[in-house]
Length: 141
Image (cartoon, rainbow, N blue to C red; front, side, top):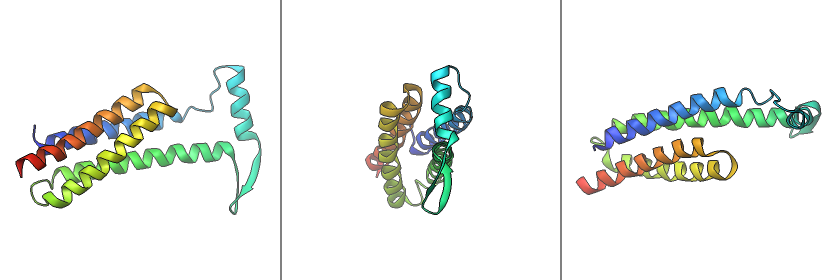
């Protein structure tokens, strides 16, 4: 497979991941049981000062969720853009590919530890495709 195709598939996977992540975490305040509701109420009920802002723990949690969505979209865009440059700027493309690929491996491991397997599988698949594109480029040069 050509590096361009591998990177485009990885970009699409990460974009889909960002969409699913955003829709999935938007409902985090919907409490399916009393214990969950108690935790959500605790996270959203009390505001406290932190570095010049007054926020709840829930605000921080929600902000981190949106930050992850933004980061995933950025990664998808970078992968898509780099896929078009593998022939023109092979040296820079490989550096970006390996950096993003390693970051995706770390992200996927984080998801395995702290979240759930479905998210990790999407991220780790994209990581394998990204790193494979770099190895294919290296072999062909």
